[in-house]
Length: 354
Image 1 (cartoon, rainbow, N blue to C red):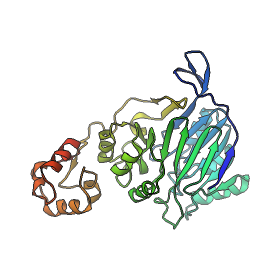
Image 2 (cartoon, rainbow, N blue to C red):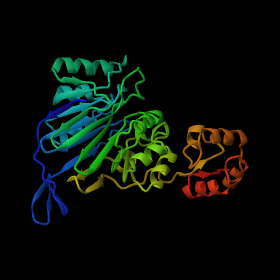
Image 3 (tube, rainbow, N blue to C red):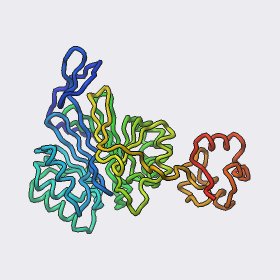
Image 4 (cartoon, one colour):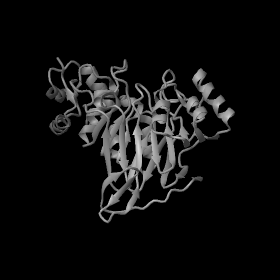
């Protein structure tokens, strides 16, 4: 285990904080506490998140390769130096503008998982690192870092095998009592690895994996994180159907408030380490107007496994026994009794669309 200390911010952790004023929050006695501001940048069908704490800045992913929106956003925030720029994995919708960021801003370190890509975008990032003399780090599960008073725990990967999405750099960032988790495009299998590792995954704010796809953010992972807020990054009307309705429903069913850049624009979270607030740029409801339930007559096996109490074996039986005229007809399946049916109906995810 290694710990890199980059700079130092004086932090006053104070109770009773009640209002923001610029980059500080004041308590009832008028004392100041440093405020962490997290920008979930509206980067279309791409990812980019900026952490600001005092004079420190950290960027997790850098938008899409064929846009300049992330660079422009950083300019608008008057960002000068960036302590850490993370490319969770080499896909062009995550490292897209990272080369420009390295070239335009004073970046102290770049973190990449170590997997490669033949794309010009990835080659450009490596060239920018080399030309700028920027530090290069390949973080691994169990590593711990500090950026001022921000604690950074690496959750994944432990090693790399060339599976770029699956081996996304996954992080838990902690400021006082407020935690944030990012998993890039890691899938449900990797989420289970994180659970099995024994890492403390409890967090107040979770970014949904893979833009809200049902390949990520399993119910087991949601239970382990137990977030109060989930945020996803997706482009309006994207061709992938992100976010998938069952993922949004699962997040809502555990009581989380859901925000997405496709409907809420850039979403900002501010915290003094004790309390936090969410500030969306626009008002809107994720998948507004769409049917949030999952049609058991057409759902994939992975989707069926999102239903409460339905594992791999029962999902396969449901697919073999289709079609169903109603959710109640799931009683035809061996292993689904009245109790399990009641739990399924209480979850509110399963439905029959025709």
